[in-house]
Figure (cartoon, rainbow, N blue to C red):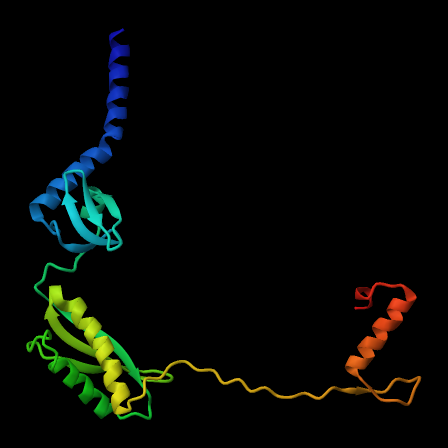
Length: 227
């Protein structure tokens, strides 16, 4: 009887241990997150491929609120065991805006316009200085990237202003921004003439089709069976 009780106790202990394994793991990870604080309440982060504003950091799980107001609960073992991207921890961020110009446009002039746009924007920081780099010589465009630094809380406003501003500036100064185009050429094809063996009269393919259908209908066969 004693050996039976010991065996049952061991089995129960194993079952409980396996059942509580995730609980202990989440609890340990929660302690690490709370101690080291790679994320904090109110910050916008990407954790375990989920992006949102940190609503709470508990011992067992972390809650994120997405931009479209969805609440995501992530077990702390996944938070601690994955890469964490904190988008609002640093006081400044770099804003990048991509734009393409046609090969017929002046690269020097386009760069000058873009730099002037960033330097005159009131929310763009003077240091580090704004820059324009050529990122690619693509099939139909020269791709540029506008790089400006701004305070983290103002970067969305700066990016929206630069996207709209560079379009207006290039349009005003005659800098072409290319877009995919497709040219379609329609060629007129004349009906082919067919000369039946029974007659010397020339008829066209549409006339021949009508004639075939008429014959089939007169003979009482299905028109589709002809084809």
